[in-house]
Length: 118
Ligand code: 5GP
Ligand code: ZN
View (cartoon, rainbow, N blue to C red):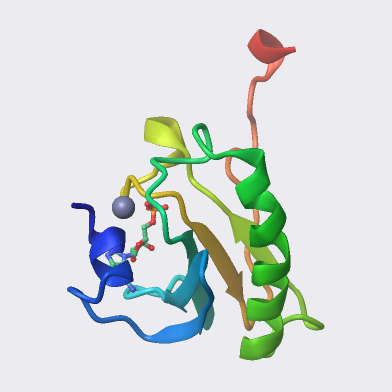
C-alpha cells in the first residue's frame, strides 16, 4: 500500500486541512513554500495520466476551498501535479501541490530548445 493510501486509512498521521468523501488535503512534510498543501483523491490513482476526468470535477472546488482555508486564495498560489520520471513524481498516488504564501519563483530552463515538440 502506498504512503498516501496509508494516510487515507489512518495508518500514517497527517496534518489535515480538509477532507470529504472523495478527497483529502494535508500539509506537505517537507514544505517548498510557506504554504504547501497536498491534495489527493482518497481512491488510489497512480498519476494524472490515469485519473478519470470526473474526479477532476470534484477536485477543482476542493482545491479552491483549500486555498481559501489556508488564506492564500486572494494573494495567489500555484497548483502542480508532477507526472512520471521527467515530471519528478516521487509518490505514485495522484496528488496536487498547492503552493503559496509568498511570491513563488518560476523558471525551469532559461534556454529550452522546444523545436522537437512543435
Ligand atoms: P512528488 O515529488 O511525488 O510530486 O511529491 C511528493 C510530496 O510528498 C513531496 O513534496 C514530499 O515532501 C511529500 N511527502 C512524502 N511523504 C510524505 C508524508 O508521509 N507525509 C506528508 N505530509 N508528505 C509527504
Ligand atoms: Zn495510494
